[in-house]
Image (cartoon, rainbow, N blue to C red; front, side, top):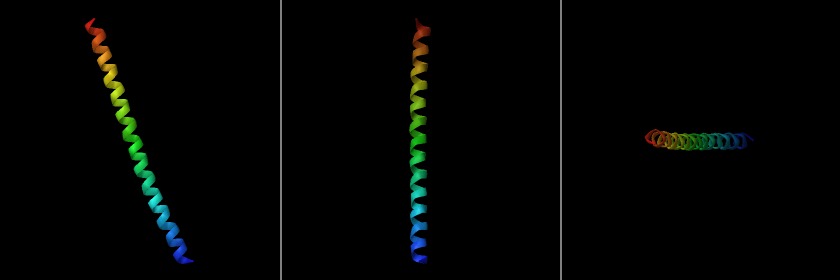
Length: 51
């Protein structure tokens, strides 16, 4: 019974680590997208000022 609980605990720890990695990947992906959008907005603003 104790072995089963340890396996379950180990699985939960691995699952939690995997979730944290996925959350980090999503966060940095969203950050990159926001940075790209900000760069496009800046370019558009610069182009509009040049007109």
